[in-house]
Image (cartoon, helix red, strand yellow):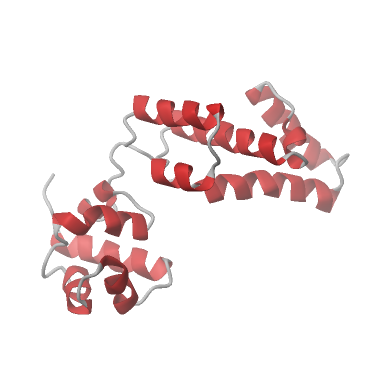
Length: 177
């Protein structure tokens, strides 16, 4: 991989702004000078190896995405978070509330998910434990379709359980560290 410091810098700036952070705020989180962040974003210098993991975590991206200037995802299609999956699952419940559980659109979505996942997804709307299990099922499906899920995000946002252990093991098998 050839490193393009200008491309990396542009990517870092874009991702920082997506997070709603200033250069100073990013520098504080990484314990580097604001000038260092400015130099990275202008493509004048590269981040030190010692901050790459923290930088990737802070910007919710992968080290590979940083090094490639956003052009690569280490073979993964995109980065998916636990919060995104929980929001997706909650949104399904919300569609049922908005349209009615007997509405054609709601029923099509639920029937398709139940069929593809061989389950009854609506049980997750009222039971927090089952909600976590379905979040894990969603994440497993994403990983199986080539998405990246950060193991630290899983550990921080999903309570310990055999289902979480299975997810963590599956992530390792897919080469996610």
